[in-house]
Amino acid sequence: MTRAPRAAALLGALTLITAACGAYGGASTAPSTEPSSAPSTEPGGTVHTVNAVQDATLGAYLTGDDGRTLYINTNDSAGTSTCTGDCAASWPPFTLEAGETAAGGSGVTGAFGTTSRDDGSTQVTYNGAPLYYFAADTAAGTTTGQGISGVWFVAPASSSASATSTPGQTRPDY
Image (cartoon, rainbow, N blue to C red):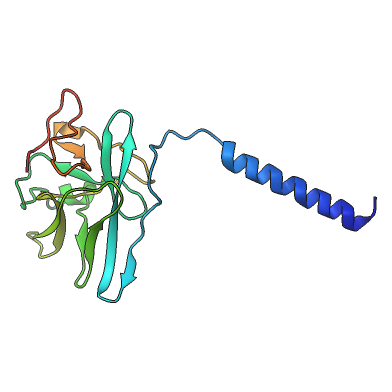
């Protein structure tokens, strides 16, 4: 066999191996997701697309930039965040800069809005509930903040915040 056919055969074999690894690679414990969202720039400003993911245990919940899980705090009231200072360091609010907006992607049926925080920033709300990330969630599909202190829960993707409550736990009905 000459070099050219051998190289072509090797390239073909590597392509098949790569494709097989991609299709059947290591097991993942992450829920099925829509494509990771990253902010996109539209003529009117940056749009942060919020997607819904489905988890067998938690149901459908929201993810923000880069597929990171969004949370709600049951101590909050509609449009009012109670998480400031050290709390906001652990639970960074999902905020927008001037000219930015949040929009629902596939499977997101509720309404987005904003609220002013004590520090003057603008926090995104979903059905009135202020949205947060959890600092310890470092990758898409991570939900380590679920149930912390009995007040932090993944933000449900349904249009009713109480529609996807985890058994034995309650969520606010904004």
